[in-house]
Amino acid sequence: MQIIKGIMNFKHYHRGGICLALGNFDGVHVGHRKILRETISMAGKMGKKSAALLFQPHPASVLFPGKAPELILAAGDRVRLLGETGIDYVIIHPFTREFAALSPETFAGKVLVGALQACGVVVGYNYSFGKYGRGTPKDLIRFGKLFHFAVKVIEPVTVDGEAAGSTAIRILLQQGELTRANKMLGYHYFLRGKVVHGDGRGRRLGFPTANLAVAPEVVLPAYGVYLTWVTGRDFSGWGITNVGRRPTFGKKDTTVEIHLIDTEKNIYGKELIVYFLHRLRGEKAFTDAVALVAQIAEDVKMAKMLLTQPPYNSLLLPAYTPACPA
Image (cartoon, rainbow, N blue to C red; front, side):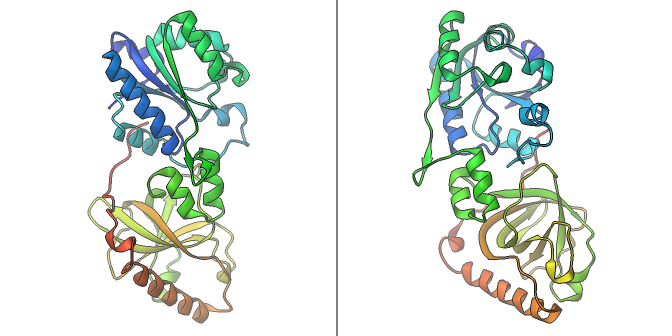
């Protein structure tokens, strides 16, 4: 995969037609992966290269500031997962109000064909483009006939009877429906961040924790305690991770705190990826620190028991992978 910054720079890296996947690709979920597979397949049949076009920042953050959805993936991980599908190019273009003002026809004629020389385009069933998002897949098919490029529209991919989509996945995560969200993603939901100093309370309680600083635009799962797989550049291991506000101690800021199971390792300042596998319980306030310690011990016990049972005792677990520049 080659990363190209800006539509107008594409000609410096590639000459000739391409097959292009269009979409926000937040989450690179099972529906997105079908779009990308079809793009790669179309490119192979035409003897062309494949590409995905991304906008940075997310269009909603420009058009509806303050109302944009939280993201499933930070930009670097979105690009990394796109690359893992086998796509040849990821083209990242700045999204501005001026760009958003292009009419659907101008976007098709000047951007897709003029700048990117698209000879094939693949989109999802609900893709929209151009000013006010007025362009639809039907419009794209019409423009394809006008400007001579092939168009393939991918119907929704369903998981347990529900269409897989970024909005649906965000809702499931925020409701604590981790298993269903992971099935729609096609991989285990994860958070990436650096370990920063906390208040040291976990160590004083006998369960040292690492505080993960997560990108503020990324969606967090429902408050609670989770069985997690934690991986960094030089180690991997099991953990229980608390997402929440620590109500027992009257805290109001949201934190992500990791306790490594049966491992004592100095991970301060290191970048970690934390994969969320199972929700052990919701967040709750305890009467005092003694009650909290007793519950944490039960959480660890439950996590260890789960690790002896399917599917956790036979999972193929990912190693650390750095994010791509985006």
